[in-house]
Every structure is written in C-alpha cells, then in structure tokens.
Amino acid sequence: MHYVSAEGLGKSYGIKPLFDNISFNIESGDKIALIAKNGTGKTTLLKILAGKEKAEAGKLWISKDINVVFFEQDPQFQEELSILDNIFHHPNPVTTAIKLFEAASETEDTDALMESIEQMDHLGAWDFDVKVKQIFSRLNIDHLIQPVKSLSGGQRKRVALARTLVDITFGSREALLIMDEPTNHLDIEMVEWLENYLNQQNITLLVVSHDRYFLDNVCNEIWEMDRSELFTYKGDYENYLEKKSARIESDLASIDKAKNLYRKELEWMRKQPKARTTKSKSRQDAFYVVESKAKQNLDEQRLTLEMKMSRLGGKVAELKKVNKSFGDKIILKGFDYTFKRGDRIGVVGKNGAGKTTFLNMLQGLEPPDSGKVNIGETVVFGNYSQTGLVIKEDMRVIEFVKNIAEHFPLADGSSLSAAQFLNLFLFPPDKQYTYISSLSGGEKRRLFLLSILFRNPNFLILDEPTNDLDLPTLGVLENFLLDFQGCLVMVSHDRYFMDRMVEHLFVFEGNGVIRDFPGNYGLYQQWLKTRDEVEGAEIKSVQQSIEKDSVAAKPAKAKLSYKEKQELDLLEKEISELNKEKDQITEKLHDASINFDTIQQLSRRFTIISESIESKELRWLELSEKNTSIGV
Image (tube, rainbow, N blue to C red; front, side, top):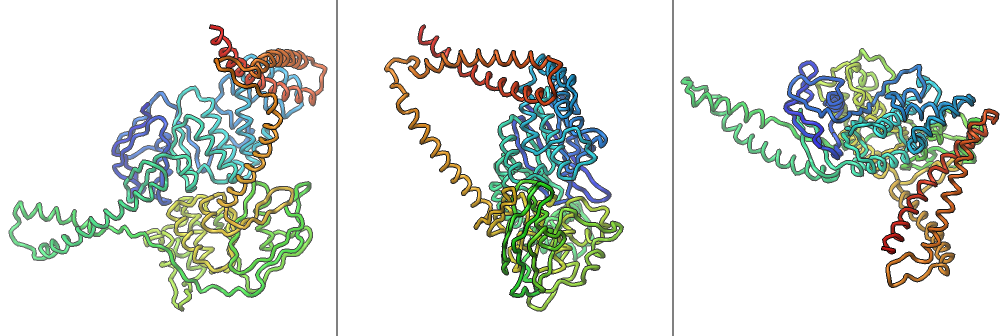
C-alpha cells in the first residue's frame, strides 16, 4: 500500500534553507531512518509529515486510509491529567474499558472494579489488557493514576512512548509511525525490547535516532539530509556508510574536474570580451554553474587533538567500603574500587538502579552513607550531566565559549582559538555568532559538551552523552574520546558508542550488587547469552531424561502417537476445569461482600486462566484436526 508521496518539498528559516526540492515515497512495511546534522531540518520534516508544520514549497500527499502517529522529542501532555488519561487519549470501547479497569485496580473502589470487570468480559478485552500490561511493565510505568506534571523528564519520555505504542496497537487503521529519538532515556534492556517490538509488529516506520545498533536492527532504508538535499540508501546503517563513502569519492572526483574547468573558464572570463554574443552569454551562464560546483566543500574533518591535559598524579580516586541507599532501596553495598590513570569504564543497569547517584558520589556531589571516597589532588573533573546548559540564552555562541577560555592548549605547545575549537565541533563561523536561544535542542547539547571538553579536564564523567546528539556530532565526540588520555566514566544506553569507548563495565545488578565486568557491552552480552545457554542446556537435559522412557516410538502410518492421544484427553479435562474455575471467579467477583485485596487476587487469576484456556484450546484444536484427518 502506498502511504506517502512528496515532490519538491522545501522549507527555510529566514534566509537559510533547511531542505530544498526533496522528493520521496513511503510504502507499507518500510522502516526508514532519517540522518542529518542537528539544525538541518530533521525534526521539521517529521513535523511536516505529522501535520504540525507546513512546507513552503512542493506537494505532499498522505493516504486517507492510514493513521499518522508521531512520537516527539519533547512530548506534550495534559499536565493535570493522570498517566492513564494521557495514554488512553483516543477513546474507543476497548481502551476505555482497560483504562477504567487499570484505574480501579489502583484504588479501593470495589464497585468500580466489579463494573469494569463486567465491561472487560462483555468486550472480550482481556487479551488487549495483557498487551497493555506488557508495554507498561517493559517501560517501567507504574502508579498510573498520578498526574503527569509530577513526572521526571525520563518518566515523561517513557509515558509518551507507551502512549505511542498503545495508539499503534489499538488503532483501527494502518499506521505510519514517526519517531524522533525514541531511545533517549531508555535503559539498554528497554531499547532491546523496543527493537523486538517494532520488528514483530507490522509497522511502517520513519525514525530519527543516533543509536546505530538500533538503526541496524530495525531499519531497512536510510535517508540522509545533507546540504539541503535528500539522499536515499537501501539497506542497513553499515551499508549506508559504505554507499555514502562511495558517493563522496564520486563527488570529490567530480569537484576536481570542475576545479580544472573552472580555472580555464576563469581565465576566459577575466579577459572581459567586448562583444557579447549569444554563444558567449551561454558560456558565462555555464561558468557560474561550474564555479558553484568547484567551490563545494565536502571535507568532513576528523577531530584529532593531542591535549595538553593537566597531569594525573599517582592517586586518582579510591572508593572504600562505600554504602548508599534511599530508604529500602540499596544503591551500593560495600563497594570497593581504585581508579587508575587511563581507566575507561562504562556504567550500565536498569533505570533507577543508581547509576547517576554513583557518578554524583564520585564527584562529591552526593555523600555516601558510610565508607570513604578519596579523590586525588590533581584530578580535574569534567561533568557532562543530563541537565544540560543553564545559562543566559541572549548570548552568542562564541561569547559563551570565550567566557570559559580564549584558547585550548595542545600538547605540542600550540593552541586552538575558541573559534577554531567551535569549528571542529561542527559550529561553522555563521553559527558561532548565532544567539544560543536560536539553537536547536541538539545544538545546545553539543555546545554543552564542547564547553565541558574546552575546560580541559583529566577525569571525564559523561551521563548519557549521546542523548539528543546527531550522528555527525557523535563521530566528533568518539574521535575526541579515543585520543583522550585521562580517566573516563560514562553512563550510556548507546551500545555502539559504549563498545567503542570503554574497556570494562560496572554492571548495576540491583540490591547494591555491582559486577566489575572485564570487557565492553558487546562482550558482556555474549557472556550473558553463553550463561543462559548453559543454564538452558542443563534444564533441557533434565527434561529429556524425565521424558525419555515415556516417549512412544512413532508408528509407520500417520496417526496420533500414544503421547499425543494422552495429551488430547488431558487437554479436554484441563480446559473444562479451567472454564469451571473461570465461572466460579466471575461469580465471586459479583459478590459485593468481598474485600478489595481479594478482588485484586481474583482479577489476576482471571487473567492467567484466560491466557491458559486460549493456549490449551489452540493445542486441542491442532490435535483434534490431526485425529479427524486420520479417521477420514
């Protein structure tokens, strides 16, 4: 099915074109990644497709038979309403019933719960409720009746993602899902679950993301916005890198040819012939086309800086028997570690496990409950936190950086000016004199990162540094960090970034347990898989030994085996018993005298029984059909 057609779209801000004369199509089942530098119009294009902005030029057609669902970087909510009300914001009978049931489950309104259960039965909504609960559980969303205004930034993003997935799940029409940085504020387990979810569902997707593993695992097409144009590459992210490299080589060769022709034509133009014939006029027009081509600059600078870093002494940082908890939640339990020069450590774990608290304790921003945190006298921390820039935005970019320092010292005794350093971090001269207030969200994050690095620290602490950064900026950051000689500790959900940057991990496993794993995240995942396979093989071996004597040999003729006949008989009895129990629970739920705790227990049991009946009936049907075909 044809979803979207765009022809000659254009959009500008002031005199600067974001994109010009771009055309594309989106078909059912496409999974497309959109890549570009911050500030070049990615989010604007998404908003145009979602109907939140209009293009200034060109034509856009979107099928009336599809529903466009937009997940924004900065989600908008009805702040006074609850999480449930915001998630189920497009009511239909099933979602309304689920919302009432979930709300009643969190209160002690017995009458409302019984009424909602009756409605769920009437609509057959229990299967849908299971899907909703899976989304809530995987995204760690609870306390559903609290108002959205009380949530943190990360919680708001997860609620917005849940709302988006619910819209897709319960939509009555086919959908185009548009997502702007969906993996921000998700821990690694959540990102991996989202990948599986998007791959399993029949979803048509257009996504902006800096997570390269996510793009590889989800997308089958890459769009790149570069110099106001749109380039399309079929295949995954790795294929895009190869094809882009080939395109740039071809463009450079074309530019070299244009430069040679330009030098010849420039000499002709400078002669200023007095007679202007039609032929010479056409040659003049061709000259300006060649000049434009010859003056293109495709160079993508690689940041290689040998910093003149403050020397780290023999003592860097030491944590001895450190304990930290918040109420019943234990963050650290007797943690010991001595940092060495050149340590490159990744911190991973579920959201809320205490990763940011650990970083704050290391810097002395949060005291331990007990134990010691000793920091060497020569340590200069550089802290890239999730809070971002907190400054006056009526200041120009260059002024902000010069207020930190005029020059960045290099190891060979030379230095870079503030303007040169800005240019290396993808702030060209025209951007340097822009007011900070006019920068995009990603550009502000890039400026914040630059300001941390420009202070020349020797111990870098990066808390989710990849959030809101574009892929070109991530390349610059990676190149800088690969040359960084100091200590590096980072929290990141970006697995590709983590694999390149760190040499071992602190894995927050919960209840104060931190595993020091010797390797990057990819090696950790392999270790987990191997461990699970070994445990699975042991379980399978036990099962096989138990079943060995009871497995009958398969007859020569196609018919139910002895074991299958037994299974069929047993299924009939089990389904009958489960249906009886289901009827009994329904009758009990209509008893007004039972207390609230009992209602909750019965409701949970009801859901479990419903799922079990469904799976057993499917198996019974499979065996019955086989038995019937044999009899025929």
